[in-house]
Every structure is written in structure tokens, then in C-alpha cells.
Image 1: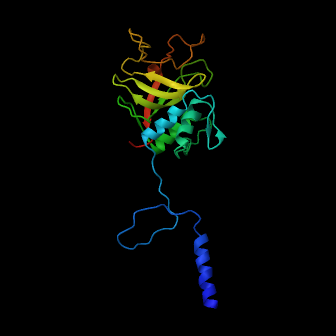
Image 2: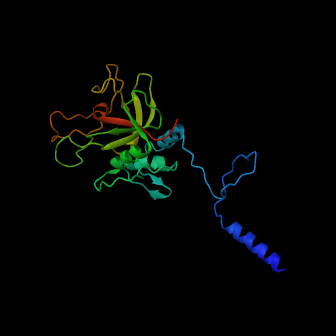
Length: 222
């Protein structure tokens, strides 16, 4: 009886020692030692990222896991990726003055890659400089002040990205082949205005998406 009691006790300890069920995997052809609680981190697809971003178009507030998220371009972008298990604010930067856009930029430096196009893919990030006077000195010297998520690139090269710019989350245009052109003669939009025009802006202040573009970035695979 004592032997049976010991065996039963061992069995109970073994069961409660692993509170997370193992991930279903193909059975190996030969016996091998397998850890009890290892999980597999799956990189989300670009299409999944874009679907999440598109669902937010028009939203006035956003939540992630039941918590209200900052209704700013960086907060919106972060929420899109949080839906798929990636926290774009997660990095080792020690900059105490870093805004949300800079936190995302630091994350990409550590876990992604930057590029200048001209070919971009759905789910890429797009960064901009000087979209507002971040440091309040009335000068155009404010890097990394805006970020969005690329939805698609049209055949003529125009990039459509999703971001929060004014009163709501919306789609915006950018065609780097013509960075200073708002609309074509036919009325097709090549660039949206990303910086609000202000009487205190210097004479050479730029306002269009292509004029304020900094770089693209890739965080997820194809």
C-alpha cells in the first residue's frame, strides 16, 4: 500500500508541475526527450496585420485586451501589432524623452529592419519627420514624429498607409516619385497633408507626406 501511495503522489506532482499544455506538434520518428511546456512563437502574416489596421479605420477610440490605448499615431500602430502578440514599445532604449514613435523606431532597430523602398509591402511601417513642432522651438527640427502602417502599394507607386492624423484613423497617400505634388491634373491624390499649416511655420516648411517621409521598416515576414 505504501508503494502505491508513493507512486500516486509522484503522478500528482507530475501533473500539476506543468500548468501550460504543450503545443501540438508532429510526432518524432524516434523517441526523444521533449520539454513539457515549450511554446512556439508564430510571426503574424502581413495580411493579418493589415486586416487589423483596416478594421480601425474611422474609429474614435481603440482598446487592446480590454484596455484603452493612447489615441495617437504611435498608440494606434502599437495596438495593431499588440493584437498579434508584438509590443512595438518593447526595447532597451534609455532615452527618457522618447515619444511613442521613437520607442517604435528603437524597437525596429533591435528586432526589425529599415529600408527606403521604393517597393514596400503590406504591414510595413512608415516613419515621418517634422509633422509637428514636437520640441516647441518654432523650428523644423523634429525627427520621428509620426508613424503609420502600410496597407498596400498601388501600380503607380502610391503607398496607402493607415494612421491617426486628425480626428480619426484613416487612409493616407504618398508617392515618393512626386514628393511635392498634392494632386495630379486629373485630381488623383498623390500625397495628403500631414503637417498642419501654421502661421508660425518657417517659410520653407513642408507639409505633404512625401516631403516629410523618413523611412520604411519591416517587422514581420512575408
